[in-house]
Image (cartoon, rainbow, N blue to C red; front, side):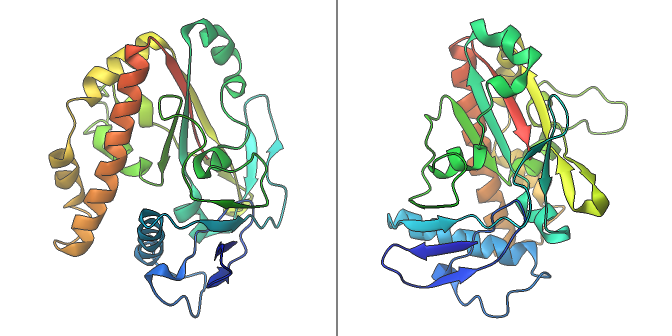
Length: 263
């Protein structure tokens, strides 16, 4: 993976298989890049990138593939070659695509008729199937049509999950439920896909509207120590919670459904 300023300034290369790792010198040195960097370290890198985007910098993104990018293994399944444990932690993202009510039957029959062929490209504002391109990382689809939860989706999943085994799940959980299915000793995975018709979306929107930053902070206090790391994680997760609330509220208001994939 290469992220490079369009002026040719600092860049780093980090090969990934079937995924993309964001690296930027905006947050400091990237010397001695290895497979055992912590999630917090990569979050710092992402934070540095976001700070750069606030300055409206553009970057050249290059996708490095060490295997097939996507291959069909079933009607609704896709296999993506991964890069071991690190990529499993840092590379699984969530994307949702809204559809009009008259597309519901088609979407239920085949979710990939409404899910984009390259969600990562849609999220980063690049052409589907990109190998290289210049982008400011603004998504290419309107926010009413497309939701990118990046890697915040596990927090939202935990926040809305049943409190104990056998408990009834709240409506909003239907929007975040799911996990990829790993194979080949963790080197490949199948995406999770779900279609939510318009009547389900209305229920989800009403429920999700009751969730806020206070709930997120209470959830993460049990995972992160008090201080800057906790504050940063709460801010990150809450920003995507609000994006999810806006997306599902708009879909419900328009009588639309949506399909989501975790991949």
